[in-house]
Length: 112
Image (cartoon, rainbow, N blue to C red; front, top):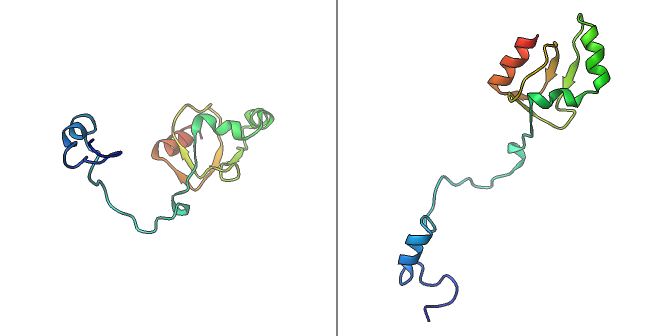
């Protein structure tokens, strides 16, 4: 009795659906026709992990040589965007990426 499965959700079982599952029926948002995921592919890395992309020897070498700065290419490591979470050591560096968040850009420029 009552039907099989979700039968009656819009008529005789409506009270149950409205009470225990609000928002089950209806639509929300805009439709995106033929959405391909390629254009949204943007892996991210935080600033606190950026020094782990180069070796420890590289970091120590450039800590002694203050006239040069290491180039950290995050695209080569498989990341597109650099986000601003975490702290950076007070050591100048050059970061290559496709996108930067505002916070990340500010922190990278502040260390040199």
